Amino acid sequence: MTTHFDDRGYYERVSGPVEALLSLQDVKRQVCVKHSDDDDILQRLIGTATEFLDGPSGCLGQALVRQVWRCAWSRPPCGNQKLKLPCGPVQKIESASYFDTDGNEHSIDPAKLWLLRRSSETKVFPGTGFAWPSMSDHPEALSITFTVGYGSSADVPSDIIHAAHLMVGNWYEHREPVVVGTIASELPLSAQRLIDKNHVGWVSG
Image 1 (cartoon, helix red, strand yellow):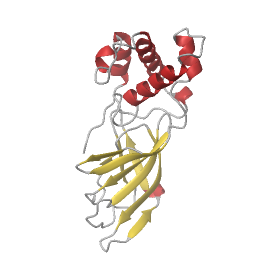
Image 2: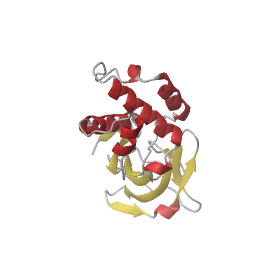
Image 3: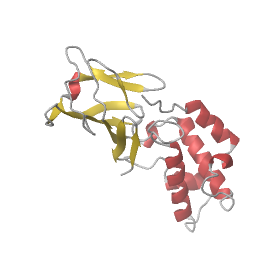
Image 4: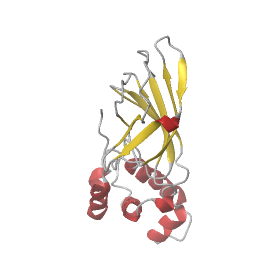
């Protein structure tokens, strides 16, 4: 589990993705490989492409195949303050909890939390008749677990899938020159344009 820290708290992937973004079989068809000698190489390149594209730290700024993330705020929100989630598309809030001013942990009914979805970000905030309760100054004053992603790999937009295939194919064909730290400069222009088209990005706040 990888944990990302910022000045608000932290966020981490709890589980998923539920399946690979690209199947080995599809990639082998794309690169016209019929033997199994390079299966390990192709699997590694699939993983690299997925990591490059997927999640809050990916270049698209969004989750692709369905996965679960947890976000914790160390700065207690107040009233009906809207809080930004690290990536989308957010499907649902799974659970939420907070620490009160006495240091006791309580759960929040996810049905009381609403989502504001926009093209560049998703925010969570208290629904009608509910406000953020008083919270302690705690590293996990408020924690929210949520499901993100388009669904299965078949639900991911086709141009993102195509960009991933172009990346894997390019790296496979030119695998000797590609080294860590130069992946972005090695992207084919067609893949870069598809990535730019689908880039959302994570806006801190």
